[in-house]
Length: 290
Ligand SMILES: [Zn+2]
Image 1 (cartoon, rainbow, N blue to C red):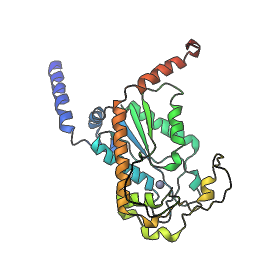
Image 2: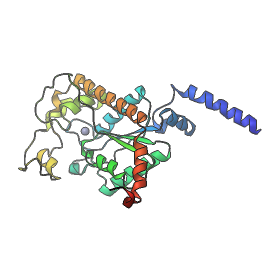
Image 3: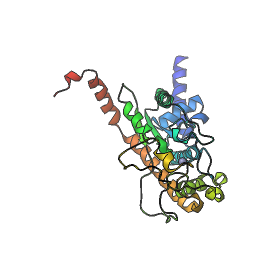
Image 4: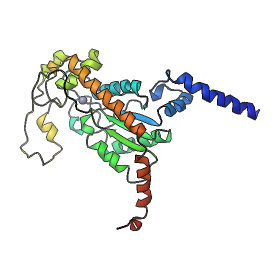
């Protein structure tokens, strides 16, 4: 019985991954437990955590714009380079939009705790390389801080943060000039490309996305109110001039950056080793040669 069992499971081991190669979903929530194991193997332990938010996007884009776009880019990237994609995640930093309807702003403590427990759970399930793909500008301080905090205590996995797309020359000329930080020409174009049915370009002029410059401080002096002072409508730029062509250029660039990140993480056999060396040495700093 035992021998037959071993032979049978060996057979399954040989047949299943081959059968599953092209059919495996990349979406964590769509995999069966058995297929999940194969998927993690196929992904070489590399998983994506696309990070969005729920916040106003001018008068013309959906609240979930960042989540919708980051998932679009991530899910298209894994078609080119396989990785397992964690479900919808939107528990980030967005205090500056609390005055607008539909914003969901979790406390600072919960943001960090939930993110840590999420990546810990991902790693416990075989994701030893977790790439956080950021889709929301308000997270740009949170995520490097979170990655740095992984040095506080030993982890058997590596957190990578992908902040945006690599800049590249070319692409359609922009029609607007000046600031374009949020729901402006770029982001509206991106959403027009990824979710045309949710993009109401004709409403983009209903509010102003102009910089209202209500603060008089030098660049090197930071305050948390800077964003609201400049963009109280939670809108920065001009979404009315958006085009699908610009969106396609931007989003395809983002997709290739994610593909490159997945490949780099898969090839990275140094980070975890160096982390382990660091954790070990951190236990007895007096033994570190001076
Ligand atoms: Zn956005």
